[in-house]
Amino acid sequence: MALRVSFVVVLVLGISCSEAERRCECGPLMPLAVGNSWVYRSCIVSQPGGEPDCYGLSLLELTGIGELAGEDYYLSRGHAAMAFRETRDGLSMVGHDSLTVVAYEYFFRYPVNDGARYQYVSTKVSFPTMTYRVEEEVVTVPAGEYWAYTYHISTGSGMPEETMSFAPGVGLVRWTRPSGDAVIINELLPSELGSPAIQSASEGNGICDP
Image 1: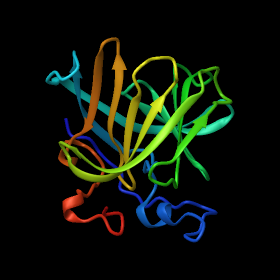
Image 2: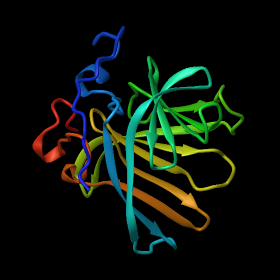
Image 3: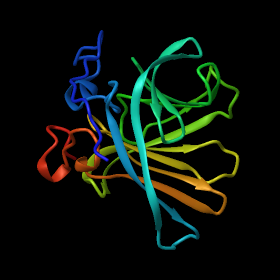
């Protein structure tokens, strides 16, 4: 089924290029506009070093704006009811099961430097302190190659870390997370399957090329 997608230019109000050069020149971590959508291939790796078993597709579509924990978020359907909000310091991503309950919050600092480390304690939900380590790299997914920030996320509870890779101006291109002894991998699929307008690194991505 074809998906209708909005193509928009996202303006970050109150932030000049001198204050946030990366964000202005490369775009936001996640282009937020109602109607934007991304389609991912979902795979599972059952044991370390094993081959991925791909079992289906996941849709992430921004459907509207709603209030969560007293702030406006872009709400989505599909892909675990995630919601997004851009701030001056980065991107907030929350999971929710209603418009009043926030299950978790991730916070991706942006602009950010390669190798940066930081901790984040959510004020919206009781959740362990998360430690983030940021890596700039080229990420290869079915949609192509992207210059991206990969955030390595740990709760310090002994669980394997999660990773989320964002290509500025494109959005979340890869997400890996533990599930028991297995690892779930979601990777962005090509635009003809419903993702927003995207560029691969081989086609050029402005000054964002590594």
